Image (cartoon, rainbow, N blue to C red; front, side):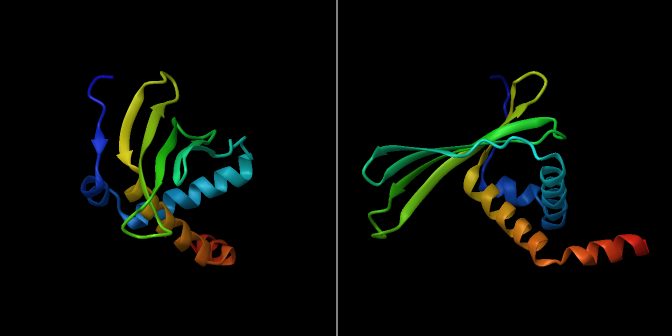
Length: 134
């Protein structure tokens, strides 16, 4: 595993822009709907009471990569009834199987969630009208 880039919170927010992420999420949703790829379910493994290990794999047929979000979910003693998540997203090259990068899962998830919300909040008819006018 030589020279695998590792991106923390600050690098992720500096490198990702919301307009680009919204466009990427929109395309991923279209591809997922059109191609109907097999999407494995997330796996959650209990480690101990209030301690879980989760793996969420993902792959789309049109992408050059595949990957997984890997997280620990432990009870947070400072916030009873709440949990603390720690994790990474690992991206692999589809041709070689080599790890392309590792990134902070919390930051990636927050950007992805915001982008998905933006895509879902715009009616599909708007894209048809807007694209046909271009």
